[in-house]
Image 1 (cartoon, rainbow, N blue to C red):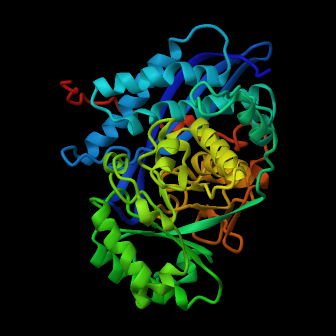
Image 2 (cartoon, rainbow, N blue to C red):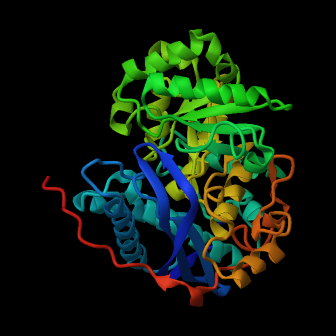
Image 3 (cartoon, rainbow, N blue to C red):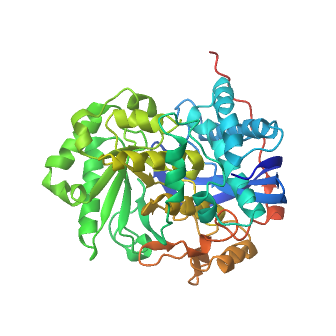
Length: 465
């Protein structure tokens, strides 16, 4: 039986993060954005009090790409999502499981956010971050680690939000997990990143010896094809086998535009270096167009959804349209990742080729990257996009003492090669052994005294409907 807890407090903090280089994806270029930190206090039934934490970037124009909103307004939507979720979670009285809390609040969260003109993907951000911090506190309260705790279903996850599954499906999946000892990095090449030469795609100092590459697309089939030809030539110079994924971040307007790109990939010999390495294409079209557009013959290539994953029924709906996969991102909800990984395992056992991937836009070194890495290693994600820390100089604006504390507690994940503490990449992989510690994949928490309270959200125009 899963332990029960009572939520005592939720506090939000933030810290500015300056990017070391511009990161362009979709229709936005990011040079800086705040990082969120969540601190929760709980009482574990029969065990006493415990404190947990989580962290994530407040990324503009990803959760909500509506063109009429400024980047700052979309970040404000995330702050409002957090505040709405805080009120809903703290209103729940009495002892209950961690998943009880999530399941009892997520519907009201999405509905309340909709009235405030906040879309479902952004609405899920608040509960996602609170849930991670609660899980961290719960694991500390019962003195166990994430991998053992989740294998024993410490959160009490059941099928109430996924009626296509049975409770036994989830319990069986969780109990059978053997976390991966290492996860390969997938090196992101943003739309403004250098392709050739020094600091380019093939520069080992830039790609950290990665065997996997994630290439951003602009939504223009001709421009994307020309750039992919250049990248393919660079990949051909590497002396080890490489694989690629493509990510359009909803930029392809419709199936016709998407088909134009895929036709070129299938037929243009200059694109063979990319086509022969291609594993899947991620979220090519806008989320609303995605739901209305069966892939048809395009499904011969593997496609996955990411931004369209804004509800518990998104994966079954995408599967019916011809999509083979879905991304796991802890900023979208760790419980949804586990539900979707259970689905993928069940469908694959029935003979389908269905999978869950690791995509990372919002993870920075420290809490965020460790918790997302642990989630991926637990559900079996063998390679994950790790671009967040690539565009930020190590621990960024965090205190040197905080960075040093994380490095000391997790020496297999961090190293200082003379330019400050950064992720330690081992032959293209991240190691997960030190994540096997009491709590949610971290032995230390941030220096709360060095953080400022979360900026109060400004008013957004409410949905007139």
